Length: 275
Image (cartoon, rainbow, N blue to C red; front, side, top):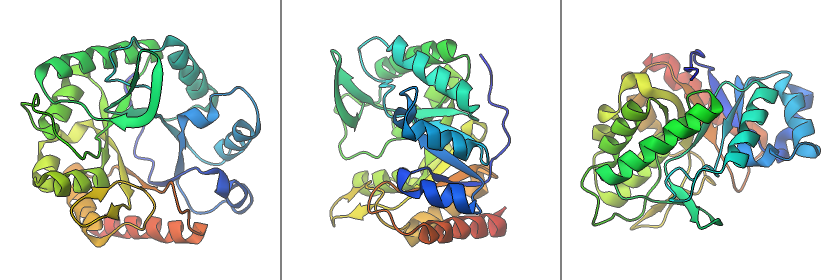
């Protein structure tokens, strides 16, 4: 298995179809782009045409929603083969997905569903990460979830689970700072305690995003600007983990591209002042 040795890529954005023209024609000051894996698995067509054009000017990473690492279904080898071929075609720096499950018995819910945090689940997840990494021939990243419920069968914290998962499976972590903030609010735990429990050498990438605060619960919607509390938590994460590739994640209510560049500039400024 190939270990990730890519140095930090800098400050990136999610590649969205609405911005293809601006990116290809104006070459904006973005260091790299993250693509949604499943958007480009068809071997041809408009999306692949555009992503290959973007790849000529920018490094890319892949972020999937279909691995379903927590499911009891067998890992989908045809899916793994497709993402391996795409990764090689685009020469991506790394591949990531989510700590979740998305379906069972071949049925997909199109949701990132939560898991109980206990040793039985941990060993199941670790085994499947190893299978995926062996098939792909490289380390992968798993992202911490945003969560809205807990399980009676959980007997460890999410941060302890994430730490043991990364160490035992020898994988990397995509640390979503907004997700830590969202879950800390929803479950009343200390977000800084979460960060301090994650091994420094396991964090390969940060996500920063906006969310929807509904009063008694926060939902990870990626459709608002990043709030000041999340920026503050990002600064705390930088102090612990150092220079980590950072991405602004926006998936809905897409703003003018300049607004995303302004948020990216803010991330750069915070990092420059902190590191």
